[in-house]
Length: 516
Ligand code: MCA
Ligand code: AMP
Image (cartoon, rainbow, N blue to C red; front, top):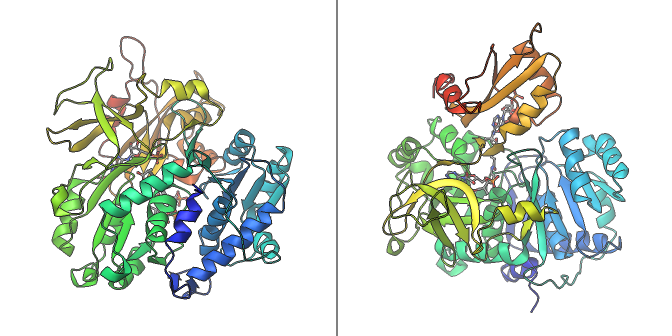
């Protein structure tokens, strides 16, 4: 049997191939209507184009394009062709992209037309042979070339443990690591979520998903897109998130998925009412902690109880609050139970089992867990226990009945608006600046982004450092969401007896900065 994820997705397309699969709600030419046949034909043409390039087995296709339905078709074409998809955040700048391309050595790079001049230079210098462009208005060489190919394509045969995607997650120290996911990882998780979240068949009235998340991360690309595709459900597609416009379309939909910032921004709109949500079946939140307050406000405003779930790039979805009453209650501030077929446990400092209610490290094992970090066998080995549980780096506690609550992270990670920022990376850039002796980057509460990045900078003796200039310089080098919202220049950092910087004191000191 062909274990190619695309085969399972394609099998789920409705019999009515000319019915609408995706309706665009914004972007060039909206509304545009794409049928299931369009998805099938376009992914076939792209797969045939890729096939014509004579790429080696396991070749990577790195993609940094603005969100569009055609970008989703490109993803489908890549997996259909049996190649490995490598999505990149659109906010990444040249230095970040150069690292990913040099590390992953993709055979194909696809970028937006406006970035072709610098992306192609980096790619060709790194040995990539093929660079295509794709705009959010159907422009670019990828589609120009793809239309010259047949719209019929037999999906490449892949085993379920063959690689399908590499997702870069920032490293706690130093550089990003590429999490290698397989066809089986993604398919098993999508099938589990289809059942656990009660995706409705056409006979049960079907579902319509509002897709408003970026498609370069697990949440938007896998959880959301696979959810709809594997259920043959229509998507209302936003290239950009806009709270007002999203609320206006809830009446045409049944399922919504978002990071907490998407929910708090909708709560700020007076148009968010029970009536606006009358057709909705399910609101799902994840990627960052959802405040209990947001959870409760949402219930009182809309009558819906948000379902919070928990996952990672390395594991896709791990736990979820229940959808069906028979599976239990949805409780705000918790991330629910281990999904069927997945084991979750809490371990102490020395790896010892802990009792219910005790706080420790969250570990996970199951068909969802990735194969390892790309070309980092030692790092991979460090992150697994001897009995092959993956150490998430998240800290939590579990009730008697297995309900998980996340209480913090052992990894030095900031999650801002659902995007991960690793302090070590930002500190590295700041420490290279002239006049800087050292720096510490921390996350502090922020009403919109949940957490915001703040930097504390120490000048070298006799030097002065301008806070605004630090921000200005960082903006030219790294993705804008990683740039500190504020920089403080001070004489020294608080340290403990071992000389380690006490980031908890810095976080406390700046806790009220954004009035969250
Ligand atoms: C934008 N800005 C941000 C962020 N986004 N600052 C901090 N954190 C952010 N997340 C800043 C920009 O730098 C810019 O600043 C200003 O806000 C406006 O930028 P713009 O692009 O217009 O912002 P936006 O369109 O309003 O975007 C906010 C957003 C977006 C919609 C919340 O960040 C977003 O889509 N987040 C979702 C991320 C996501 O999908 N995560 C899933 C990861 P300036 O003006 O100074 O330049 S998957 C995952 O975590 C796991 C596996 C899981 O469990 O799902
Ligand atoms: P990434 O692998 O980069 O997508 O980020 C995964 C991290 O996001 C996890 O290790 C958690 O720290 C965090 N995360 C995801 N979902 C939740 C959630 N529902 N509550 C709290 N943290 C979450």
